[in-house]
Amino acid sequence: ETGVTQSPTHLIKTRGQQVTLRCSSQSGHNTVSWYQQALGQGPQFIFQYYREEENGRGNFPPRFSGLQFPNYSSELNVNALELDDSALYLCASSGSGSYNEQFFGPGTRLTVL
Amino acid sequence: SQQGEEDPQALSIQEGENATMNCSYKTSINNLQWYRQNSGRGLVHLILIRSNEREKHSGRLRVTLDTSKKSSSLLITASRAADTASYFCATDARETSGSRLTFGEGTQLTVNP
Image (cartoon, rainbow over all chains, first blue to last red; front, top):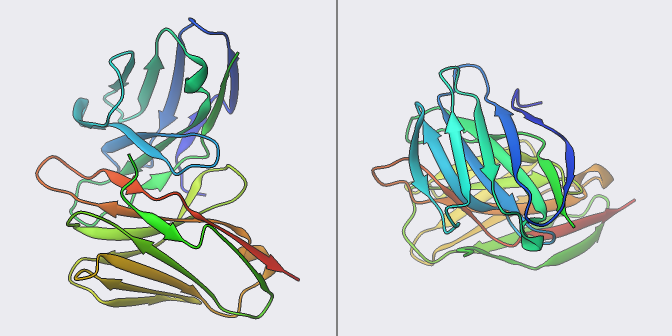
């Protein structure tokens, strides 16, 4: 157990809808990163939040957005869902040091019909 | 986009044998990390090796890093059926704005009892 929790575990949505995924970081961690993992592939970096500010973004469209709260928990919001958004969404928390490992949560499995 | 490429894509061995997985990457890195994933669940951090390190051990795991060849290997000795999982390498090219992990496609390891 990493101490990183995500909710919900599974989610089914239809195309065009909006979804919010949640992540609680490990105690003492101020950085949260979000990744998308399509079936059979490695995770891809979506964005990172550090002390409530976006701190880097991968190659994802603006309909993927996020928030980080003062307690360092985080949300990932996806608008106008597309079929290709079906994936496992992983969040990872870390400290801000140069060699801090990232601790991953169990993920949210999103299915878009 | 994926930076790393794992080799082989799939590996099947008998319990007690050693398993070696390789990873190649394209750009300069700050560190390289290996993760394990069971059946589409969250990622478990195995080991982190810094760019100025050549070899690191943790229990039955041995990781090497060759920055001149931009490659790394993960050796699992005396494998067990419980080692069956997908293994991913991830590079961290941290610069000024915090880390982001770039994952390979993974190696699916099956250890037969």
